[in-house]
Amino acid sequence: MDRRPVPDTSLELSGRELRRLVDLAMDRIAPHLDSLAAQPASHSEDGAAAARAVIEPLPEVGVAPEGILDELFERHLRTTYNTASPGCLAYIPGGGLPHAAVADLIADAVNRYVGVWIAAPALAQIEATVVRWFTGIVGYGAEAGGFLTTGGSLANWSALVTARRCRLPADFLRATIYTSSQAHHSIAKAAVLAGFPPESVREIDVDAEFRVRLDRLEEAIAGDRAAGRVPFALVGHAGTVNTGAVDDLAALADLAARENLWLHVDAAYGGFFLLTARDRAAMGGIERADSITLDPHKGLFLPYGTGCLLARRRADLERAFGTRGAYMPEMQRDPEFVDFCQISPELSRDFRGLRLWLPIKMHGIGPFRRNLDEKLDLARWAAAELHRLDAEIPDRLEIVAAPQLSILAFRLARPGLSEAELTALNERLRTRINAGKRVFLTPTTLDGRHVIRICVLHFRTHRDRMEECLAAIREGVREV
Image (tube, rainbow, N blue to C red; front, side, top):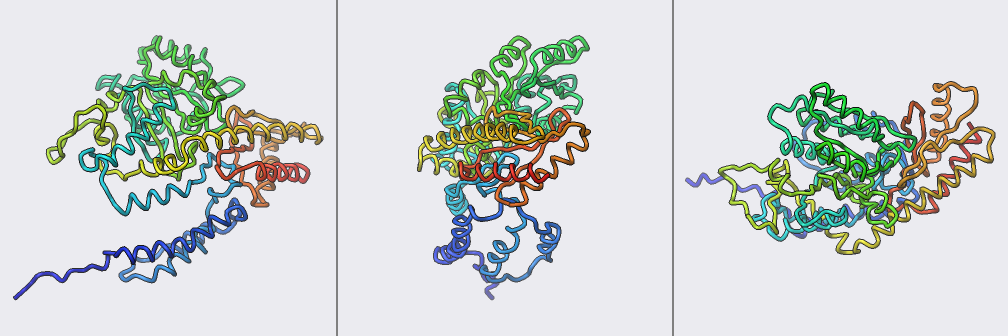
């Protein structure tokens, strides 16, 4: 009796079946993209109710894709921040180039493994080529290397792990890490996940422009040395998340050299402004950093989940992450090529290089550079308009953080109000600005002051939407 199992081919889509599924998706994606300018920039629906509506038991049988896609586009997408909208001026927007969606479709459909070079030499080299482009942008030499990550958090963690393994002994608990009080919270989180006690991280005061103070850094380092601790790493910034502040990177590089500190630069938000002439000069010294975090899903407008860590010496990454397994193929030794599993924390990984390589190959870097220059101009235009509005109203409209890159922060100030009352006033103002849903702004706190941020970093955001933003601010100021 033949007892061979009956083959189940229900998961094996043919090319025609896949094309139909993609066509069904495109029937919804295309009008979604074409209507982005008219869509609300934020949602007002009950998010809890929407989330509960998705909870269901594990289905045993499937349903038609048309109904699934309709549910996704007509219900679930309506309860999200519309980060693809040109009115998204909140947090650090990116927008998500649609080209990358095509690249991901290709990468996922062919499903090649790029963690080991020999498994897909040309495809692994596509990612290596993208990394080489990035090392050139920051000014690194031929000995540099790096890898793409899911974002800045993983890149910052990988940087501190690399620094620890290259600079510290097995007993490293007396080591200290120095950064700005404006650092992204992923720095402290990365330190803890890299094995350091939370108290190992020193957050140093900033100046009036929210750049780390060199004198306070030097005092903290000297104090730690005198107390028997081991100053070890310094994290500078090329664009902080709160204000876009750029530390004096050349001075930080000098200090790191004098004190024998690993210098890491968190350039997740601001790093790609190096493509512009005006900010290349402002970030001088970044090429001396031991490692740099970049987020292409910010400054190159890629979809979320696209980060990068660069190291001035690829050998440092190999020392930190190189391991062997008996089941693994032989790693190649040609310095021109790279096994990503040997320089990064991941063994299994997606073919994420294609989502960068495809749009850059299609357009060249010129349009990216021009878009970044446009965002710098728009931020400065918005600051000038806020100054003009300040002269028109009885209250004070303070620009708390002028744009160093494409972020600015402001607040409405009224004499005689306490800080708590000013916070409530500016919360009402921001609510009123966002009520029209043409723009979406978010708050932060600077020196104990509640402020409203504008972050211009969306490839779909142009002068027309910024004019709408300023009109909403004017109307909101008059109403509150």
